[in-house]
Length: 273
Ligand SMILES: Nc1ncnc2c1ncn2[C@@H]1O[C@H](COP(=O)(O)OP(=O)(O)OP(=O)(O)O)[C@@H](O)[C@H]1O
Image (tube, rainbow, N blue to C red; front, side, top):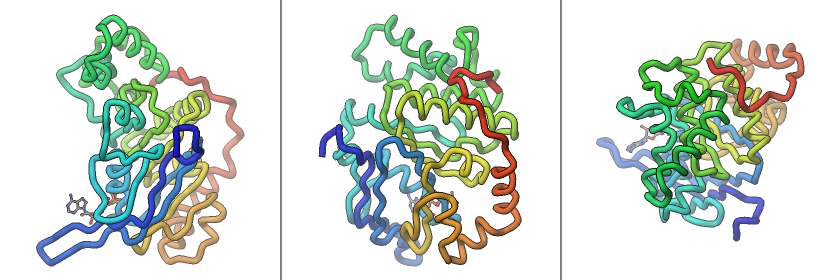
């Protein structure tokens, strides 16, 4: 497979087994998942079904016990500088360095490469700052002075600094109020379209899930039991799906989705919250 292939993430016969005091815990068993270029694939599943572990395996931070994970045809574990540039990750709480300014945080992965002069790195970071809807005046601020929505935006700019074709999002709207959450979803939707990104997202927020996903994959019984559109997934008979999507919370999110007026195409540089 080469970089022109439509498959960005290819997971085959994946087993993840952790040792515990009581023996072994099987998290994934023979899990298969293929993600094509341009998809926004959301992973949903009960607590402990291995969604975060799967993101970490795609990022190359953890190795499968058995089976293979490939990103653009390469094992993410073999991350060279070029490999690392293939995947951007937005961690749940932003994971910004508190001692660094906004711009230093965004520039960090590029600076670590030690390949470019400072001026070029600074300019690249400023471009990304604006891409996520922030302004040059935010560049010298400290993370402690930012709102939750701004922290997410800075973390997103850092995840995008190397122009990765694949972006991983762990609970991108967790902790944001509804307005900031909508605004961040608009930004993600715009960037997905404009940059032609492939996105893999873990979210417990059903509004975010229905708002952004082009496909939903459900993890249960140690594997992906079904993947497809919201409609297809909801129609799949499984107790987890019934409880998750057809309980009160799911019904409200579905109704809100149907009631929502169609959105105008969002600018990638929307107002920061
Ligand atoms: N390094 C590790 N060592 C041992 N067990 C681990 C390790 N990492 C994860 N686990 C276990 O693997 C299982 C899956 O964890 P993971 O965090 O991926 O679940 P999740 O689906 O993201 O859950 P949640 O929705 O609650 O965040 C859990 O039982 C967790 O305790």
